[in-house]
Image 1 (cartoon, rainbow, N blue to C red):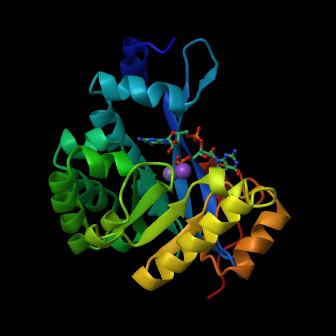
Image 2: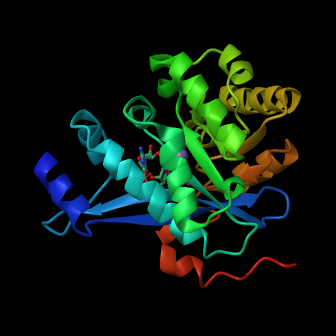
Length: 250
Ligand code: G
Ligand code: G
Ligand code: MN
Ligand code: NA
């Protein structure tokens, strides 16, 4: 059982870390960015999934300081990478509701020296549903600063298609449940094709998540998906491993 006091102790100490998973150009397989994924080692030594502890942190309000730590740590790491590479950071709805997100992001960028256009914020449909006006105001301010916005887990939630037009997204991330259905499920293929067509007409880039097989990658290339992420292309890895990767060509 994940306990609030363990999370507080981890944040006060050095119990949290970030792993980074590569996101590649679908056609050339060049590295484009890395998604920061939060990791926690429980005092008993086991690794706990964010799917388990993020909801607890959200309930007790700890997600606001924890989210601030994630942003600063991700920006600090990315500031040391070759400049074409971006970093993508996941946001909880409570980070927009519970604090002045544009100010928190501006502070993280200023403190780390990361250029705003190298930061991508991944938001989920829940954020848009809870408080659409507040979210729209915050996201517009972030866009004005030069930060990019991605809509994560697209297709699994309950956002209407009108949100795609109304909110200032740069990117849609197709949820991995559709990508993983590509080989066996005609419906999943139809949905992915429709998302790609819709995105092109709305001028949004598409990242396909959860790519695990060569066959899935082949389909995504054939249908001109922009970027891909998944175990086939790279696992989440510690920051130190990113420094060992081959640098992008000039
Ligand atoms: O890394 P993993 O696949 O175990 O992540 C599980 C879930 O936790 C995913 O939905 C992911 O978006 C979420 N998650 C990972 N890191 C963060 C983070 O820093 N903040 C928030 N809010 N969610 C995260
Ligand atoms: O919800 P979000 O997209 O942020 O979730 C990211 C999570 O997805 C991370 O926990 C990461 O470990 C996981 N993930 C990344 N690539 C793959 C993959 O190819 N297959 C599966 N099953 N999970 C993946
Ligand atoms: Mn994500
Ligand atoms: Na996702």
